[in-house]
Amino acid sequence: MRISAAGPAFFPVFAALHRECFARSWDEAAFAGLFDTPGTFGLIAVADDSAPVGLCLYRVVADQAEILTIGVLPQARGTGAGRALIAEAAADAAVRGAARLFLEVSVNNAAARRLYAATGFIPIGLRKNYYKEQVDGAMIPVDAEILAKNLG
Image (tube, one colour):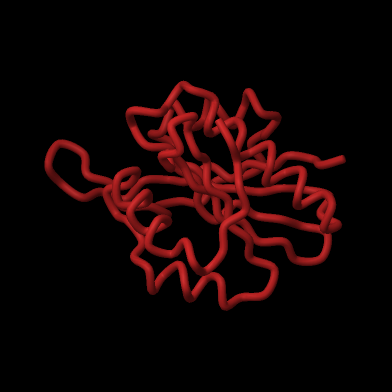
């Protein structure tokens, strides 16, 4: 597994990966808009066969950083790609001066919540009705847990 910095040339790859990872995905224009914001950085996880298997987009502002999105292809989950993306984003954010790294996760996403706990994130809050998720064929509001990890 290799983690590489990825910028605007990777918008099509980001969009394709996001589409495979999430029911409500972001397109190339969404990634372009996010990269227009100063302090936004991207990472791609590449498998040993050189195929992209994951992405992470994060932003660093002053002494705080936030993971805006992170995803690993379903067939590559459990391979360490998510853990490696988090480690690289955290290390880079710390070098850029961030003392804490934040993210949000659906309270229904048990696998992601386990990964985040295993990588040092702790719950610090809740955003009510933050996501819309399909449950039993209907789109329903779902809470987001806010997590934080101290860096450095």
